[in-house]
Length: 172
Image (cartoon, rainbow, N blue to C red; front, side, top):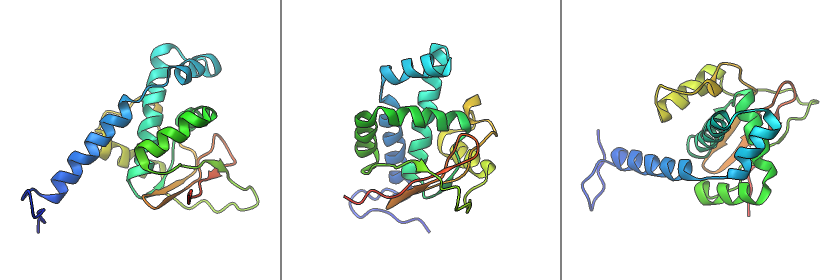
C-alpha cells in the first residue's frame, strides 16, 4: 500500500527520498579546507585522497544522522571523524545544521567490552543503499567497532584499532 500526502497527492516515500537526497547534497556541499589540509599533513594523504576522506566522513555522519541503526566506520573514516572533531566549533555547527543535534564520539570503556552492533558488511550495505554501489576505497572491509545512531540520539562505538568509543545523545 502506498500512502500519499493529502495536499500534493505524492507518494510519501518518494517525497521522503527526495528530501533525503536533497539533504545529502547539502551535507556533501559543506567545505572545510582546514580539515582537508589537516588530513594531508597529519595523515600523509595527497589532496585528492584528503578530499575523498572528507567526503566519506561526511557520508558516514549522514548515515548516522539519518538512518537508525548501529554503524561501523572503517578505520580511515574513523580517523577522518577524529580529526573533524578537533575543529570543535565547525563540527558542532555541522552536526546541528545537518542533523539537528551533536553526534558525540567518546572512547569505549575497556572495562565494558559489550560490542553489539552492525557487522562491517551491514554498514557497507547500508552505505551502498544510501549512496550507490560505487563507494571509495575508504569504505573497504577494515571496519572498527559499532556505532548506533538514530534520529532521537546517537550511541557510537567506532575505534581505530582496539578500544572503541560510545556516542551519547546530546539533550539540550
